[in-house]
Amino acid sequence: MGLICYLDDSDNDKGPVIVLGGYVTLAERWRAFEEEADRYMKSWGIEVLHTKDFQYRKGVHRGWPDAKRTAFIEGLFWIAGRYGMLGIYASANKLDASALLKQTPGLQNMSPIGLCFGSIITGIILKRRPIPAALPLTFIVEDGHRNNGNIANYFDWFRRNSEDAAKDLGSLKFVRKDDSRAIQLADFLAFYGRKSAEEADRAGYPPKWPTNPTLTQIRRHVPHQYERIFGTRFSPLSPGENLVDESGLLKSIFFKPGRRGI
Image (cartoon, rainbow, N blue to C red; front, side, top):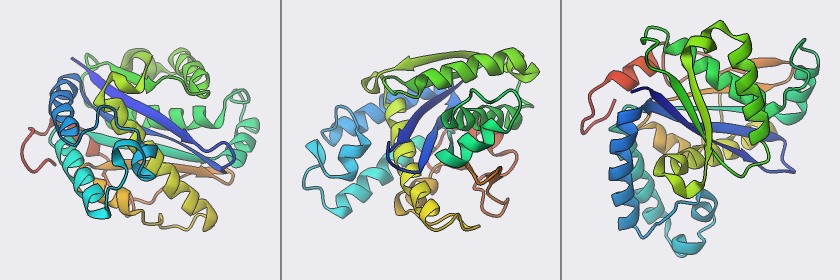
């Protein structure tokens, strides 16, 4: 028994931002989710969900009208909401994050994706503090990305340098996209999180996060925690903009699965 966080990153090489995001819940909840989500996706003809194909209507999604796409998202995240998940993601302006890291003692060798990963680790650990330490926090990340080495380096650094991590962190492993529906769900959040982050970057990072229709839809079923990094500082959304309170993760992982979710 423990907590598992599935993560994926989304990085347009020529774009200004990078996003790391995914979902966390109890291990036994993930097992139940896998069975239900697998049946659901196969009923739509989807063997492996590739979010980029979904967005651009390629492959099995070719010719899907907007109503069908909306219905698919609604059903998938209604299922996710039944299993007490918390969505968690962080975005960084790559140039600003690199400059910030160079100015921070001990972090000069970290990358922007490492900064996002650090934000996610600390966000989960701080919010799960009342949970017994017997529940280790394991990270499972999609394999094949050039940023994965930076994630592994930061995971090791955090374990060595953080007292919290010494008793809270489990393991880190990398899996293929076809390994689980959970990692495909993480890919979905990372992709649309980046789309929204790029919109915010173009708008000059207004205090209120620009509305993304897909993110708005999935948030109706699953609470999400978000942090953005730009300029010369960490800049989490204000409490009024955040979609979970300080006990959001605890509410999420301990609620009893049911029709309405959280």
